Image 1: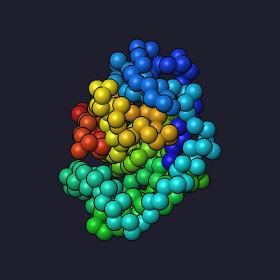
Image 2 (image 1 turned 90 degrees about the horizontal axis):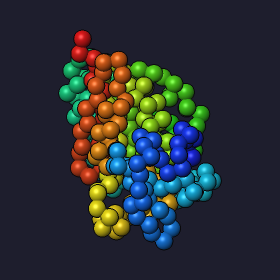
Image 3 (image 1 turned 60 degrees about the vertical axis):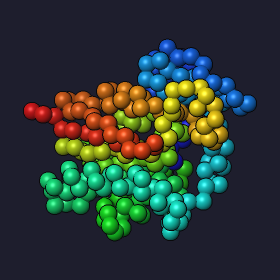
Image 4 (image 1 turned 45 degrees about the vertical axis):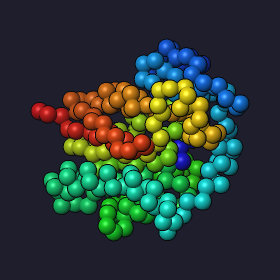
Length: 247
């Protein structure tokens, strides 16, 4: 899983973790941390002083018991896998006979999603990367314009510098179209709902995305005439779809 300690971009201490806007205000405080909200992209984030060390962070991840064959966990992951399959069926398989190529970013020690997607009924070709568990495959992040899709399930809420990561992943998606599939609970705007939200209780969760945060990304990531379409599926799946330039 990508570390929350990825180097920042020289931002002001409490500038937005995503868009770097200084227009942020204290949104909520609990017994352990403070949470700030950005007025430009609606991201809610935890300041650096509350972030765990790399060793502390990995110790939390090591407690996870997500293994292949766990039907409940695989059903959970299917909430991302099925929208991905639907997209590929309509957009990739229809224009080429080759096997769709994907990368599972932040795959975890058991690589459960990658194993699911490489098996029937999906049968996709999969690469994997995880900063803590499979750092030796970091070369996958240098394969620009290579992948039909990239998955990031239960990852982006841990990112300290999400824009840098999203830019890297976006560059790895093929120029003729592809999808970045994200699974993370989306934050709602009211303090009342946030105060009782279980998602904040994990100390490794430091970055909380709103639908407006993903829309900001969709407006910011494209270049060279390409566009980005957002699709929201349920409460926690977001597709950022790269569309090739229309010329």
